[in-house]
Structure formats: structure tokens, C-alpha cells
Image (cartoon, rainbow, N blue to C red; front, side, top):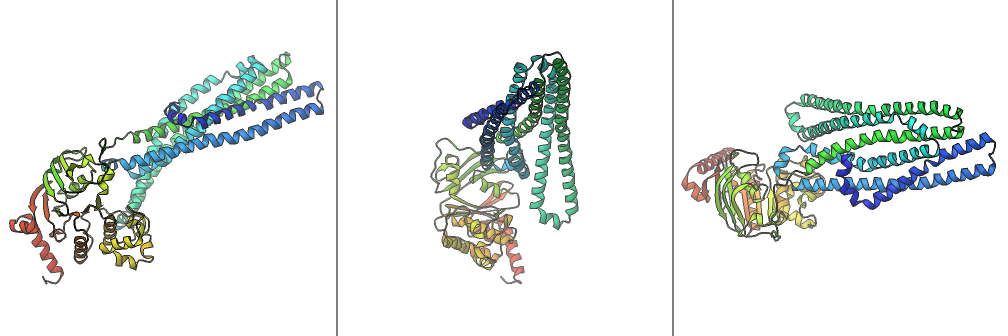
Length: 584
């Protein structure tokens, strides 16, 4: 029952609803002990020939009042207790979602999306059931069972009550053992479901790759194997779950046998009347529900405890990017200065950036080039504070970036990542994602700057076209340009393009860069690229090699210096000439 202790913070928070609901449950439990007593009294009146119409009407009226009051109270305790349980689910779901948004990229490298979705659905349902049906079952089984036992012992026969309850210790031991096994197996079953959820999510996202490599059958077999594992683990849960009702029913049946056998002897001995024995067996019938409920309670509680443990473990994951106390809330502006001795990814062993030192003045353009894996994207992500574990500092506007709130820092930066992500919404909604109140004219202006307006006009519904999940209906170039338009709509202090022109042709690239230069006067731009034509106009160009700055300067300076930059520029220029039929 430790899960109730763990959830006590919520019960205290919703104490008014729970206390009122529990009081209603207690009254209903007490009212349920009245009908069997009335049945016994009426039977004794009939046996003694004392029954009259007035007596029958009086007891019928009592039963009617009991039924009406029970009806009203049953409605209200359901609203109060189950309604509060739904609030718990909502609160934990919101807490989980907020927690997910605070986590750094390393968290998502360790966790699969499907697993996180399972925490936010299946696990929360199990916790909600614990706070709803679990509380109901606990209170109802204890109160109804207590009232029934007290009524049987004090108004009929304490001897017969003790005899009838002899099998109960066996039931307590058995259900406790079943509960422990259920907790262990349900935890594994939930883990298996999380893995299956992750597999489905991953396969659907990568369905094009699966089809391109003809891997459909292998993927189906992989899914079938994981699905069978989920079934096997849930069957293990079901085997324990299935033991509760038969065990309790068997022991309650033994209680009935003892009650009827010894009760009949007591009637013959004159210690009980026929009516009292009938009432006693009716009470014993009422006692079946608390016993069954107690077994069901173990089931609910152990499922809830396993799920709550999983959710709590997830919420215990520490945020890696923390804001300083009294952090600056105004967005930064000014020069950007990098002075990094070394940066290593969390849990990594080798440094991915070393001795990165440069100053980018406000309004200038920075170009970053180098081989794949040289550290271009990592260098840009440090400015966004996606990682903080580096030796050195990055200053923006004369202050370390850690002195600003994350919102203030990132509101100054428009970031277009390599893996451009579009939401399953309209083109307009995707462009206006970070600025939903933007007017249509502003959205169109941003699209024109990104040279995607004409493409959008050709779509079936123009700017109201639904692009599908992750922009599945668009080409790579269209997705890139819509992502650029989304960043441009904010008119950010710093625009970061992380290899964001790789999917467009050279002419479109040239047009986009020209539009940026004309419309971002006085604004800073940072461009990482493989195609040198995208950065040759930059005020400062960095050539990265294995995480170090191998060369630094303007295009003209680097061409005079020679080395990797000039060799790559000449090679790409030659390739461009070949594509154009040998014309310069």
C-alpha cells in the first residue's frame, strides 16, 4: 500500500473532495447493512404469525429511503473521487510534458519517444485508477467489511462470526503474495509495452527507408517478436491476476459452509432464530464483496505502484541546463565571443571542440565550414545552450550566455537546424509557429525572403495546405525553405543556418543569400555549410578540422593563404562549371 503514501501529497491537495467522497462511501456502507437486518426481522415476524400490513409497509418505506439515499450518495462519491483521480492524471501528464520540454538532447538520446509516450498514457491510466478505484475499493472494503462484521458479531452471534472468519488469515497471506508477484510482473509488462511503442513509432517515422531497402518483411518479423514478448509478459501478469478471484471465492465458500453448518446447529440449540440465521447468511453474502474487493485492491495498487515508480524515475531525471538565480530576462544583443578551451559530450570520452576562439561583431556574418564531423553543428548548438559542459565561455552582448534566462537567450536567436522539422499543420501555421499572432502579410513576406512563396502558391490550398507529419508531402528543399521562413518571421537578432541550404540548387541559394543580406542589415548571421558558395560573402569564415579552428579569415584571405579552404573552393567551382556544361 506504499503507493497511497507516495500519493499522499495529492490526497492532501484534494482533501475536501476525498474527505467528502469517503464520508459518502462510509454512509453507503452503513446503509447496506440495514436491508439484511430488515429481512431477518420480517422473516421472524412471519414465522411467529405477527406480520401485518402496517409492519410490512413500515419496513418497505425504510428500504425505499435507504435505496434513495444510497442512490444519491453513490452518485456524489463517484463524481468526487473519480473526478479527483482524473485531476491527478491531468496534473502528472502536464508535469511530465513540462519535464520533457526542459530536458537536454542527451536525455532524448537515452530515451526512446515511444517509451516516453507509454509513460504519459498507460502508466498514467494505472496511477489514475489507483487514486480512483483504489481509494474506492480500500474504503469500501474496509468500511463495508467492518460494518458487516460488527453487525454480525454484535447483533447476531459473535461465536458464529469467529467460526465463519477462520479462512480469512489464509486469504490475507495469499493475496499479499500475489500482490508482490503482480508488482514485479506488471513492471516488466509496462517496460515491454514501452519498447513496443518505441518500435512502432520508429518504424512509422522510417517507413520510407524501410521500403527503400526492401526491409518490410524483416521489420514485420521484428515487430511480431516484440509483440509476442509483450503478450508473454502480460500473460504472466494475467496468471497472477487470475488467482485472486478463485482464491477468495474458495475461501468465502468455506466461510459459507462453516456458517450454515454451525448456524443450523445453533438454531436447533435455540441460540439463534431462523430469521437471524437468514440475516447472517445475507451479511456473509455482503461480506463477499469486501473480500473480492480486497483482492482487486491488491491488483490495482500493485499496478499503480509499478507505474508510479516508472513515472517517478522519469521525473527524477535532472535538468542539465539550469538558469542562474536572478538571470537577465531581456534578450541579448551585441557581439558574440567564443572562448572555449574544450567541450566533450555528456558521457563522452574525446573532446569534440578544442581551442575555439573568435569574435563576431554585431551585424556581421559568420561562415563555418569543414568536413563532416568537424564540429560545425556542435559549435552552433553551444550558443543555444543545448549543452553547458564546456571549459571556457561564450559571451553575447558582453555577458556570458548563462547569465540570461533560456527564453531571453533563445528569443534573440532564429535557428534553422539540419534536421528541419515541420508539424502536421498548414504551411501558414508552420511558418508562424513561433509567432502565431503574425498577420498573413508577414507570413508571405517571410516566405518570399526564403524564396518558397511561389512553391506554396502551387500547392492545392496555398498557405492552408496541410503538410503532413514532419512535412512528409514536401520536398527536402521546400521543407528547408519553410524552416528558414519560420526563423525569418521572428526577425531575430541572430539567424543561425545549420547547413540549411543543402537541399536547394545553387541559383536558389544565391537568391536566398542576397535577400538575407538586403533585409538583415545590422543583424548577425551564422551559417554552417558544406557548399562554400553559401559562405564566401561572410565577414569571418572558420575552417574546422577535428574540432579545432584550422583556418580563419575572409574569403579573400583564405584564398591567398591556401590549404583546405582554397582546395575545396577550387574543386567545388570546377564541379559547378561541369554541371553548367563547362561555362564559368
